[in-house]
Image (cartoon, rainbow, N blue to C red; front, side, top):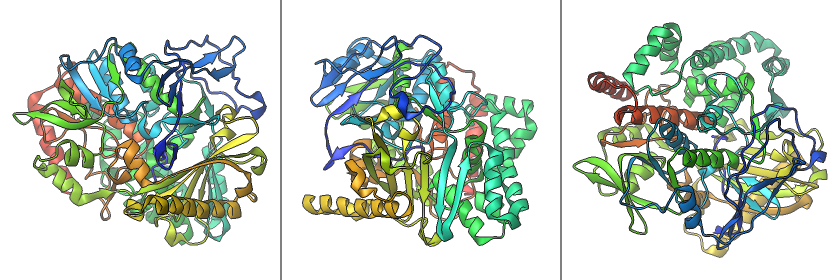
Length: 619
């Protein structure tokens, strides 16, 4: 389950109601946990400034800005009547028109798309980002309702530390001059598993290993050996300057500088976490725990999770730790969008791309639902590969590479998501922020509605909810087929029924009295995700049809169509915030080389791309 991305917007009956949006520029600072009695206040060593975008409104949608008083308190002050289009005009330095020529057009403003766009912008490219919705971020966005600020997706933020090379979110923000204050999370996740197995994944690696070996003392050696292999991979990745694996000058340069690290990664590229675990661990329950660890990463068990993906997440949570951005996850995308504009590029909202324009087999532009057309040297799609090749290129023959991709991977299931506001007293004061619940049967791990992930971001940042309230964001896997063909009345009734069952399970397992404490609730289904996040069947990326050969079958950013690139969770290295940010960095580097902003060698390019294509056929 890609808990770095999943979630849904806040809807009543899948109808968008009012939404508040804010901008803030603040200092990246690892501090201690902030007690709830500090309210909306936090301290920062630097003067905090706000973007000149104050309280714009479009219909029922309010676009406000975080105002900072000299005392340090933060409030949202929406006050305006400008439309979203007028906001875009101001941000984009003039109304965006089809007569302009761009170096790159990015379809979608998810984290992968925004990282690619901002990386290109700081290299000197002129970039246009086209976003269907009214705010950036996709499944890493936010919405506001009744005094609550809800993260659209998960509140577990990897890649957001102040050290190493895998802190890709921090690096992406820094590239455009943005910094955010963050709150360290002392526990990545608290597992509540069958046979009353309870495991906290502590921020400190030693504490986590001590707790795990306390539960499985007879497997101490195997535990250490498995996680040590994870660290071997993580340390190799963390030592490299991360750029495009499709760009040979960079690739060969890294190999000559760090041959051992590169060979380490090449060795593990075709391997899966479950196979490695089984080399050292025999206890079935402990292997099931490793499955649960990997399910959080990839929505599949350990035998189907690439070892490189697992290692990135299972180690980064201890190396840099999980750090929550003050004000909510949506601030990441807002800051990147702000930095994009400040670096001379543009972002246009309410811009629904319906097709990619081809000329003599090359991607040269896009067409919007309102008939406008925009043209660029390159097109980058942050849509899923299914949406890119099945909808935006509808009528075109599916390239052989994409046929092969769809033979190896299917769409991962979507999610049922519940956003709630509850009375604070229902949660014990020492409650962890993130929980994974699978009560009685390990075989239900991957079944729809079998396991539950819960985030309570107000345990870290009290300002996200009214005084005396907590936010609960609950989600569980759910196939879109369960929600198709229902009359509206039956659809709404089913949402309430399924949500009530999920909440009842949490009440029984974790929080007695939870139901009676609810003061606000909204439920989203896969249809909600599909509608508002423009994801085919509400999917959150690819899932292998059978046991994969690690990451060998995952496509990179280039495609068989000249001038067209893909970025996001259906590209290498896959799902998760840190993974899609990596995808964005790689894509920007490859595009920059192709438009003359980075060094390139056409001969080496062709040879490397043929080699990578051949390797994917082995999967």
